Image 1 (cartoon, rainbow, N blue to C red):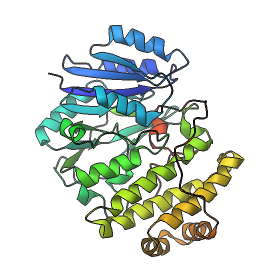
Image 2 (tube, rainbow, N blue to C red):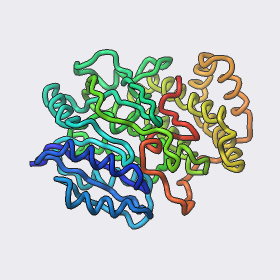
Image 3 (cartoon, rainbow, N blue to C red):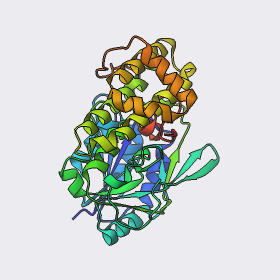
Length: 353
């Protein structure tokens, strides 16, 4: 029986994939499988994955005929997963030796639906420890209770799918798949759904994932229209949370987070292409109009004068219609660490709420 399935998407990461694959070899076990998803790479990545299929125990290579983006690539891996547990890694990140052994052991000891872990953020030669925002460690908790309070950074503001391990029962319930076609911020609806609908989780102080930042080919470094998918991702968060039995309590958190991310990207709007910047303003205005207006009125004064003023100006603009699927630009989409949680020129995962 397969104990753990690890889903690893790759797209044009020939420079970094050797480190990723070497670290997977240092985590291999006879009951682990590694689902390596080539998202239609056009560099030497497919050649590296072919070699891995021969040399990495448990490796299975899956291919897309066209570039689909990180969310869909992860779903391809999930559809093929056979393990009792599931984990994720991105094709430009890497692991400490034995990381998955330790995760499986902790998951089996605690018996919860999913675990969250800390990670190491790597920018060039600089490394920094990033802690999952869960104070109580090694203790089974309610994911729903970890969403609040609205005014603090909480577990739903730490969306990294690769920072943890997930029991198969979540996959069987449909809670691990990502929204098809989202090119960025695909982890935001995912982490909110997990916290609303899973029954138990825990956080542990495991530092085994090295998250590579500032990759020049990643979507967070490219100011094109695909980055605007964060609007569609957060619209989904608001829509699904509004249907929750605790909507009155949870919506202020969802709205505040959405507003914080909009403000973050408007604050760095010069990094976007001019037409994308225009769309960002118009789509942000539309997003603010679609939010529950009574909740928005409650949230804005608590966000500080500068952010509140920015958001109120946007709210008065002529809005754009709700976004549809992002058109294929033909340039491909980063399937890597920054793409996983970035919705603009800089990652929005750590935006202050």
